[in-house]
Amino acid sequence: MSTAARSRVSELIEINQDALIYRFIAQLTEVNPVGILPEGLRMANAFAGDIVEGPLAGSRIWGVDPFLLRPDGVGVVDAPETISGAGRHIQAWARGYAVAPERMEMPPLEALLAPDFKWPDVDFRFTGCVLFRTADPELDALNRTIGILSGTVNMGTRRLDVTARAAG
Image 1 (cartoon, rainbow, N blue to C red):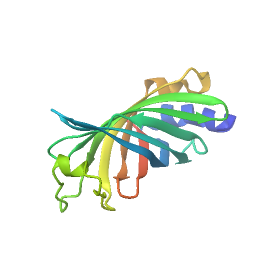
Image 2: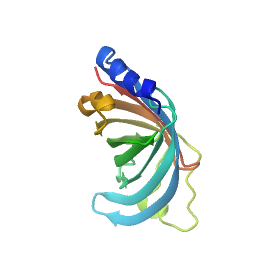
Image 3: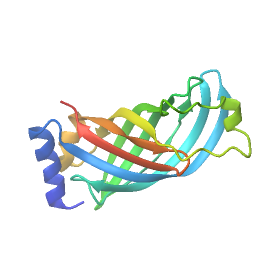
Image 4: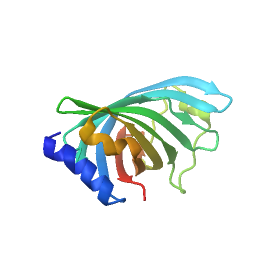
């Protein structure tokens, strides 16, 4: 991330409350079921990718989400993230829901643990928010910004496509 990009982050967020913070495309690099708990199926899902749009473009993003798939089929994201570029780092905490398309009937949680289970190639809608922490003075505006997240999660292809915009 260049110096110009860092100063643009502060400028955009301070001036435009709907500013694009980032859009990233990532892959789930590991999907590790922990097991079925009273609240649903817990997984530890690692992800890594690139920020492809916005003032943070060119940075990497990665983390491990202790994902929970509830019995009603709603996925609960609670993902600590790290964003790094040009030797600078941002810690982020994303929370939200991944919801299957209305036409899709979710199988029972037990079926997802079967060795032969394959996730379908279907985009789940993702909606949430993200909070940021950074020690970089040029990115300080992120420390008081809530990002509104929207995008898709596809467990079949393991692809994440997520956009964050500054909350108004």
